[in-house]
Amino acid sequence: MKKMLAVIIFAIAAVAWGANDVVLTANPQGIIWSLSGTDYVATFAPAAKIYFVSPTPADNATITNNSATIKINIDDDISAFAWQWIGTNYTLFNSNLIWACNFDNVDALGESATNVLDISQYANVTTPQNGAQYTEAGKYNGGYTFTATNSCVSCPTNSAFTLSSGFTISSWVKINSFPAVMYVASQWGVTGAGSAAWGLYLGTNGLIWLATHNGSASAATLAGLTALQTNTWYYIAGVYTGGTTGNNGVIYINGIADKTGTLNQVPQKSSYLPTIGNAPSAVKLPRYFNGTLDEVRLYNRGLNADEILQLYRSNLAKYAPARWLFQAEETGLANGTYTFGASEVTGSVTNQTETRTLNVDVP
Picture 1 (cartoon, one colour):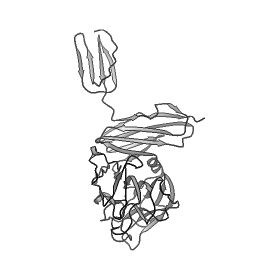
Picture 2 (cartoon, rainbow, N blue to C red):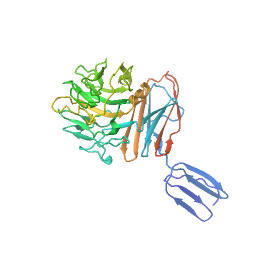
Picture 3 (tube, rainbow, N blue to C red):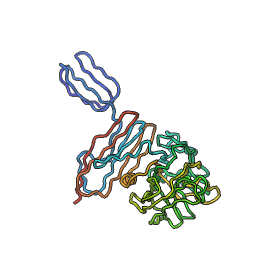
Picture 4 (cartoon, rainbow, N blue to C red):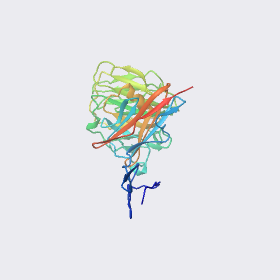
């Protein structure tokens, strides 16, 4: 068979045409043609593990608005993920992420009314309790609502929840009303006594509070400046960078610092359950979050301002075994050129997308 051109529309790994034979073997992506004598050989590269999907702009695309939506699919059991934006890597998923809930109730991942998947490497057994309810009306797909005194989502405590060197707790929140102090996430007691360690909560005036506790009579607290409103989605985060002096505490709203100050207590190792949507020891007091929470994350280090901004603009979700979707909405783009890409690590193997260029030209 002499020189020929073939169009192949099904998945195969290699094709070899000789004078008398055709050989097909399975699997595929990316055809590489080579000529050997009178034979054409088509070799298929292994399927990409991480790749852009629609509506991500093509490489060197030009857009005429100041925002871009970028989506990346990952087909792997990842141990780390980094988003690359304008030459900076933002490691949003690795061993520093110790508790993370998408709240999407995915059957294929074993989620149900009695089980929430912790997508972090620690895979903490996370359980909705006392009337905590899944809702499809989350910020990203599903979320959880808390409408009863004891309703919460919690997991057993372990050594990973030793946060004396720093931590970041973040969540998307939507508030129904302010019946009382409402906990977003914590290892905390109602009065801050006993084994309390850390907490992110809202006051009755809508201000965000971040607290640490070392076991003394009272806690160290930092109050935000901006009151949240009902029926509105906000991304909030509390960051403690360690120590007892300086500006080691920061509260963020929608990626922007709302208050910076000092938390003069190092959080102790707590025996309380890490809890979302309530305070662990709030047995008979209305400390539940009256509204919806989504995409709760707890890191064992204090993230910086740029990392918080990228978390606000993006989301990483697991939607099937060894299947992930990352999406970013980069906004406020001035005219100019931007680069972006991503990488993931599985075991000792690193895979990455190509680096793409985006041109912004707003008339």
